[in-house]
Image 1 (tube, one colour):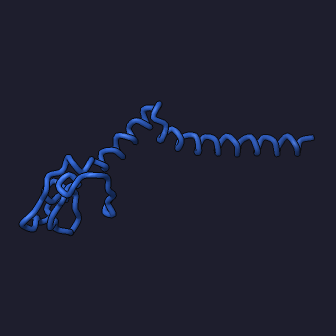
Image 2 (cartoon, rainbow, N blue to C red; image 1 turned 45 degrees about the horizontal axis):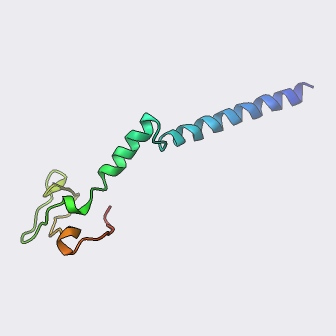
Image 3 (cartoon, helix red, strand yellow; image 1 turned 180 degrees about the vertical axis):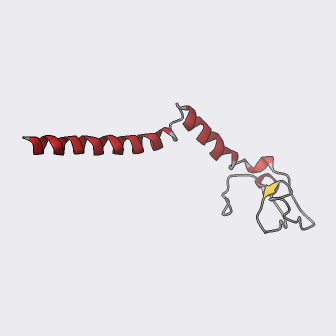
Length: 97
């Protein structure tokens, strides 16, 4: 009788740990929670629409202090930026994000 009770206690403990671990990750993506809203703000900050960026043409902009012409960089200089609005609009994707 003691052995089944011990196994049930261990199983309940493992289930509680699994639910705790997986439940906290789900909250980070639920827009109804503060954690979810903060995560959404962080994600959306990295995906500014192309029409908000100004074109950068004509001269190389050196990467200094982690930015080049307002764009984040790390050991790579900026040669140019062509926002979608300057080449006809539409939607696009960035392989650098």
